[in-house]
Image (cartoon, rainbow, N blue to C red):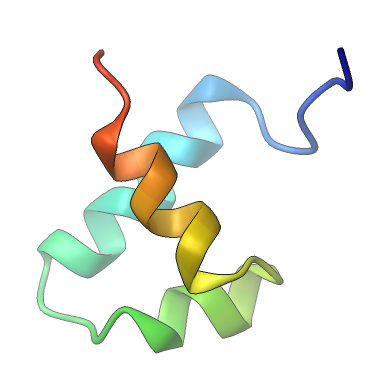
Length: 46
């Protein structure tokens, strides 16, 4: 299995950016991930 480019802490930080009020596309563009990846991360159980 391929290792993730982001650590668990970075992943949580990216998700919190959107929770803080940013549109989903903004953190995705800034960090170089697709919106599908973002929503897959969001759906993962913590």
